[in-house]
Image (cartoon, rainbow, N blue to C red; front, side, top):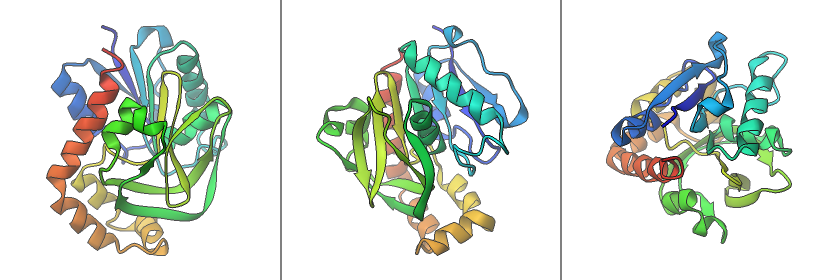
Length: 231
């Protein structure tokens, strides 16, 4: 089996629980650190692609030129029917790459809550695995659907998931561990974003940490459903 490639956009947004799922399932995987200038592989050399999150916007190609190449790669893999999973920024990049639009939302969302599956989403294996489960929704951008996309989930006035063929974008963060969320919200822009959105960052980290068993179960369900589309 060819390896799965994980596209990492910044140091503070690693694979985390997604990497754990690959290891548990015996899936060969590799990380491409786009933020460090690492080169994208030939799409024909991979069995799946996961694009992770990041604090930048999908529209910030001027400051982060690798985003343009990443979007082209996601579009090419989708066209070749290679399974693609976009998470948060990765979801927005995927939407933009396939003809939708990613942009700054009127307000940020930083909460630990379930998304709301659409009727189509309830029939989708990945969204069915996420349905009813609390998950970190941490974003200041949103996206419009590509023309041929199926909307899988909404919540809080946002689109939260979609599918185009073998490509699935999910705006929430099932890959995030309690320690990773704690590091995000310890200080800096992410902490201010949470406060400005009306969320107490310390209370959020406390609640998320207390739910660690639930969080791991959610990650297992979601990522196993995606891995099942690859193997």
